[in-house]
Length: 218
Image (cartoon, rainbow, N blue to C red; front, side, top):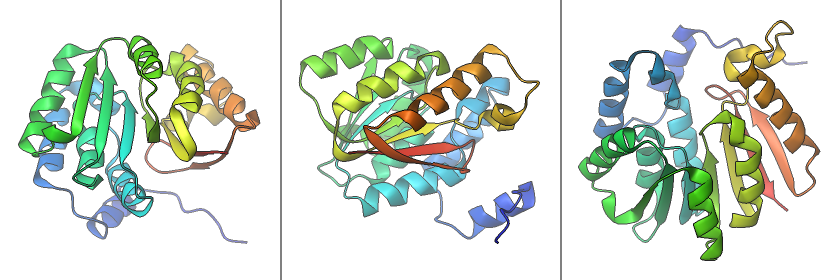
């Protein structure tokens, strides 16, 4: 039986060196985020940039909903993978980081593909549902307390066979530590159990970055 590999920093660098090259704008966002202190952990991992890029390309995704934008690394990564007639709607309530993200989006010449809605995500989602929007892919990486709400709404917004991808489902490994029972860890554990039992999707959890769960709507 094969044994899962423990991903050290050296192995992570080796993987990155032998994967797709990040664009100059992606590298610039990563460099900027390093200056932000503790909140830099809100950005996705480089491996997730590559994974999203290939998934969007190979699945012929044309319309994406992103719930949680931060400074735009995931946004730019997905926009760059979309075809010229693709569209991404990004939801984030933080105007300051959304402005930073949009600046990078413009530098990457991707502004024609995006609609940025700056308000609480659940408010924006209500608008999108009222407008009858449907998506090929939904990426969830926002406040963990609302993960269940975002997932439930995503079921209504995603097309059949569409993909819902959720970040941080391993939460730095804390989800398996019995002595870790803080609010966020508990939210994520409960959320993981909730979607595991949901019959509307089939799903797989993968140790990419801080953990991704990929769900396909049945």
